[in-house]
Length: 447
Image 1 (cartoon, rainbow, N blue to C red):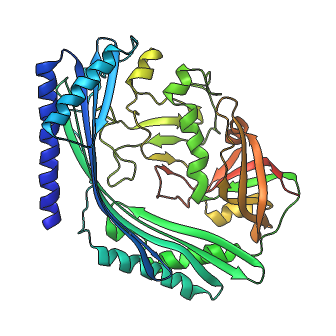
Image 2: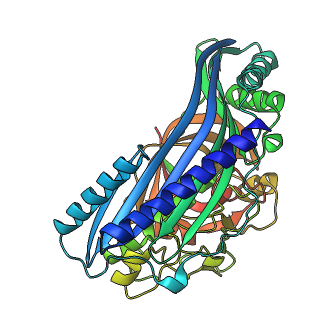
Image 3: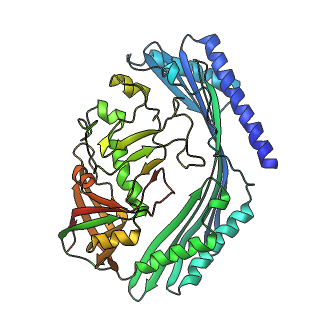
């Protein structure tokens, strides 16, 4: 494949750039240094109402240099990888460090924590960057959505993307590692109308291998089904009732835990979980396993943004919070060691009760199924939670009608403890992989 040769050539160029930067820094400065290059190549196609609205070809790269001058830090970045540019970047980074406040906790990670042999996680599955195939894929998705029901009256767009990313990282402790990945995505958003009711909804698919994307006709039908189901929403009265967060938004629900246990918030004492390490914050049956090494995983990485080796670990075990999420800096601030989470999390696997979504509805019997969240009403310092939602009202374990103009509220501590069950309809399209979540009771504000 011509593309494979092109990527290999690009990869060698990036590796040499990192090597040369480290060598130049060794010759011209007395500083510790880390160098990171990320290069992304790919296409984006946007089709709307069977008209190609946008075609993009991306070839974007950035070089990041961080120097540690005693206990001061200087960071710079550039899209220019030339020798002159790199020399100027090093000079600027050193100047920044000389004019920065000293901080005893800054510096390269501990040598023993670094990744000197990156695991092959099977993330790289390239296919030719074919614009025509991308247009065909996006067009079929949209056509199938229109065909599904005459009430589908318009499209907000059908998208297809194919991207290849090369990551190369090195530092003055002798680390020089790389990994490549591919990511394919498809997205469709449609509008339905009947009488005086008009609604929109979307569906998407993402995968490391193009053949693992949802087939375009299936993706289009799923979008259509979702938007048709939303027609003629009703309002409901203010009350307290059981809540189900659907699989599509369960990742968002658990994302607040990421913020609450991040090292920066912990050492700044700006999280409501400050005193909850090694304490129970979820039901005893609930576990959260982080596995960065899943083959073809959307959240898989052999090392973090500092070059620290990623590891398999429990975030929550039997309901008990087992760890903070730490990089080298905030780990030192807390007197701990890095957990390899500089830059985020990797493949959180949320345990479930091995019951179907239908079983979950039956277990709830009466309550609100939430399928879309709106707003940013979460306070990590207090744990208070308030968000606008859309969804469906459930009675006798069955979906009755769509609802909107609703706000749900509570406190994350109570919400986590009040999780009754999680179904096995796991959404694998996110770093956080979880089924639908049943919570015993929350405040619902409606009419």
